[in-house]
Amino acid sequence: MAGALSISPADLYFTGSGTEADNIAVYGGARALQRTGKKIITTSIEHPAILETYKALEQEGFETVLLEVDEMGLVNTDQLKSELSDDVVLVSVMHVNNELGTIEPLKEIGEILKDREKLLFHVDAVQSFGKIDMKEAQAADLISVSAHKIHGPKGMGALYVRRGVNLRTPVTGGGQERGLRSGTENVPGIAGFGVAAELAYTDFDKKITYMRAIRQHLLDGIKAEIDDIKVNSFEDERCAASVLNISFPGVRGEVLLHMLEQKGIYVSTGSACASNKKGQSHVLKAIGLSDELIEGAIRFSLSQFNTIEEMEYAVDCLKKSVADIRKITKYRGKK
Image (cartoon, rainbow, N blue to C red; front, side, top):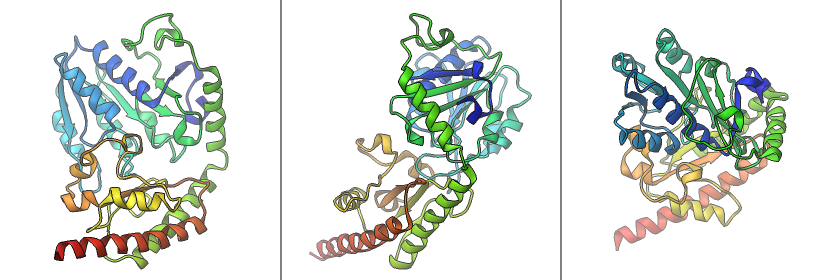
């Protein structure tokens, strides 16, 4: 794990999930520095593990600033600069957006924050670890990762804490993980996470090149076979190879999801881990999509284990399913 993150093993702490790692980082960082200031900054498109934790901190008197993003989900760094008053103690920005796949400019953000001693920079790298190069994330003081995103065991996460950073832990008890995360460690899960990390970064460039090729094949097929679509993700290397988000106007994403599911194709209408929740995607809303485009959006998640044949099958099924839904919708509209 330490090798995959290019850190010392002494700076790595294991948790029960990426969400728990996020919580320890945000709660621990904000509370440890609250005598210095109570202003905390994040973006409008973060995972609920961050946004809900920020909301909870507001109840403790912290002031939250949500940075805006552009139409592709890139964070507004000018707004970040303007919000950096002396009372800012924590900035949290995800590395790769889980719904769009957009890679955030962590190097630039790190440069903006590097000279501020009384401020912690946290990066939620759950969607990037094992999927893209992690060099830019090393600008952070705190990095959260999760095992199941790289085909490791569910219920395993980890948190990198830069040497010298002191967190006020929200998890107390027997003092495991050097007092940062009390509770019996999941040793088989930790071992499984380590193996998954080793496998993910073996022949890494080759795997990512392959994933980009199958993603492009899927995208090209959808563009060629289905009219009236909107690609919400970057089509180049500004997007992780593992994510593709597309809107199909005139189609309800939830209906399309279930039609594809019946054919053995599994997609999501938003964050995969929040697929049971109702309401519009806060991410797609933040990038300015219309209600129709949000309702018709589907997220495809790809891995090194997918094949070109699967992409072609997915395009064929998509073409028929989208046509069927639009035909029914049009018919009902006429009635």
